[in-house]
Image (cartoon, rainbow, N blue to C red; front, top):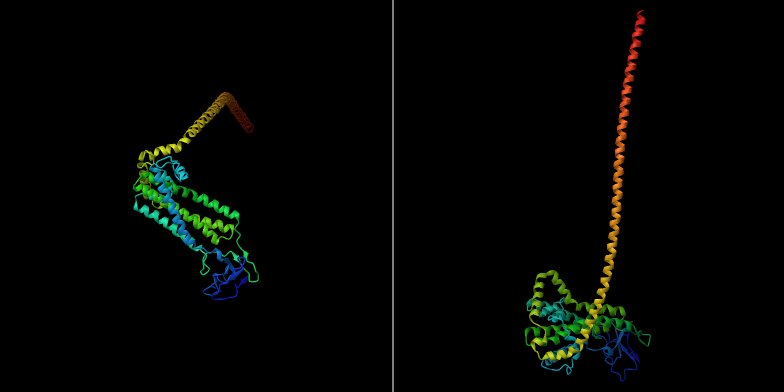
Length: 433
């Protein structure tokens, strides 16, 4: 065991005969950042540390950029093999001898001639690959390149280079007063399970649709649309595979907790939605141009049928054989569903009949109550009229009485005046005498 880290050594550590018995047997300051411009050169070290006492094993060094190129060439070869298999199957290659039987089963369940339009994505600018508009192709290729370059940035940052500063987060801490190093990574099985779930949910659809497009390209024969569908499928599958690879290697490089693992995964998956976000932007910025391009793609889909039997009737036998097993069960399912619908309809009709009877009885009761209310209202009107007439008669009587009282009062006042005048005359006479 030899620990040389934390001693500000420079130069090259000589190669020893043995590397030790564990990963922390031979440690030196050969990581970055270093206290000097150039870290210690130690090709025989089991672990390299930086000036922050953060360390990682030399076994973690691998060229992720070179591996990414190999992976993408493998993906391209796989897609070309799928396209060739589809083409050979069209030329009277039996279904059972096809090594891509599962792909055929995935790609032949079609409901409309425009299934390639649905597969590549109506809400994505990748559908512009089915258009003949030059601007649409420029936008689609631009988004494709932007996504690819972004994923390449993450892949380059995920490489472990002890001689240069990268995004790689060292996994161990090796104190100078301790023989063993401490693992600082808190990523566990639950974090990787969520990582797999996120990637599966977000990327499986695009990968499956890419395979469907590559498989369906041979259906159109040697035509421009065949190449458009083929290129669209290759681009869609390739960028999805690149997203998967970059998510794996970048999280291995920098994620040291479950939260970081999920966070980095969501950020990388957001890049895969760039094509859909641009499509949404075009709906706001230039809806007229987008509508014209969409109508052009739909018109091409309507003109070019995806039914293989019209292009090559000989392939109909293979497809008929592949689908014959499910036709009978499908018919039985339809009949069973029809019977269930009839039963449900009968039950609903009975419920509707009961509801109609209930409504009729309610209406009848309401009509009877309304009639009673009308009768009560008429009787009240009659009572009010009789009260008015009695009041008028009483008022007339009162007015007659008041008139009689007025006449009596007037007569009394006249009599009183006459009596007063006689008394006055009598007094005058008495005075004269």
